[in-house]
Image (cartoon, rainbow over all chains, first blue to last red; front, top):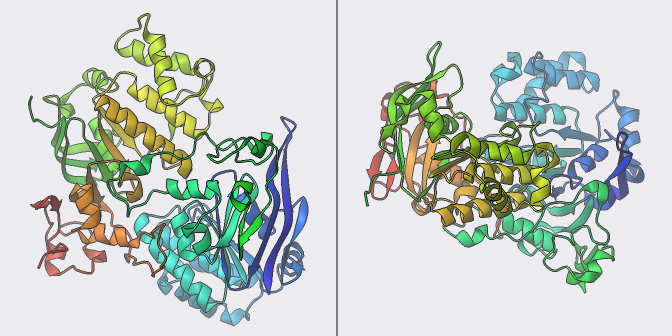
Length: 317
Length: 322
């Protein structure tokens, strides 16, 4: 029982400039059921593209994504309106992902109706049950999204996602748009739901501290490729790839105080244009460990210790 | 040498003009010469409004209802728009979260930056060199090309560097930064933080840094003001506030943040409820409804900011007290 992401490539063509963006360049992931995969990386690394592919919103140009052996695309299409779905997506912004003219109760019961999950006379009680599951009061049913706080809206989005009784939840920056003081509650809710409903998560974030808090395994992405993969302890406490190391160093840390050294930068330059990817290792232009050879040799993920993979010859040799 | 603070804000109150709703209440703080002060708060806490008031940039429909802002012996709130314009840029400069809204999209950058000098000091033969030097100081790679480019040709990080160069052009005494790194990737954020920190120290410039991210200010500023529901609830040195927070909100916020290091993953302590709207707080502590230490007094009286040792805290039952 697992999610298999095999050799995924995704290309976007820009018609006006006749150029091609390589959003994903050969991504392989195996995620056992009940586990949480954290995907971390900066803008343009392909993490949201991967989310759209896993949820079947888009089709890869190459490779296949399967859930328990069945392609995700087919599973979703074939069963869209007849039974529960395999995978659901929770978006970053709970302000734009809810219909402003639909009452909260209707927004949730709509999902149950469309998927024909319970008999008509039970829809009402199932809606109440879902609201309770995400920690919302039952009288919110008659409210509109603008009457709710950001945290409450994100709970509604989560309720809508689990209403379809999915196995896999793709969470794309689910707490980034929320006030700092309500993030912890939503994170704790996600952890509780994972246990209660035996859910598998893909948790996408630019915030390593959140990734560290919720993930079993972590994938660090850079320009369409996974550069490091392993358990959260391996990747975050013992990072091997120079990019992962720089990313961790750059994370603002509220536990380190009055240390101006922490502002010392470790990475020069910016992420290169994905239209003109550098030759060799895509990171070599910013890498402190880069050798002349890095400009020519492509890096592949190599297992440096059990279940810990790094795409960097300077590390794995 | 005088020991007057560079900027002093006394009892600042801000409210909407129609159907008066209080947005900021009794805010007082100061910034000394050469000092970096942070303001931390969530959306709606009043941190940005307080800063915009200093520059006389409050949006339409919002007005100052009380207080004074003293800078260079003058109350900025009494100045007319021409007098304020002389202070903006020259004495106090500001950088914003979104540089695209501050840069003119249809004017080449060189011209745009020179215009800043032209409208204040007047251009001389050295002005163009001054612009070039600053652009290279903030890390723009090809300065000659940049001078001939438009804002949209740059990445978000580069635009923010250009904004910083623009703010530094007239050597202001005070730089106000309103979440300038929030929209940036972490590695770029780190570069910008390092850049601002270096530029500030080099010039012995004062800074007011506004953010919602405690991690960002931990190593950037000397003193910190924590805002909640339109008021400053805790104020003091960064070290004291992070190590020994006295206000239950500050303490709750700090313990609700996951750490990025360590081996254990304890459940996050969360603050229940949502931030209160400043105009709905009334005659009580704005945090009382979410506070585990709250007693009846907290619901019937407004706690004032009181100095306790190094920190000031606006709480009847602060942490660390009996």
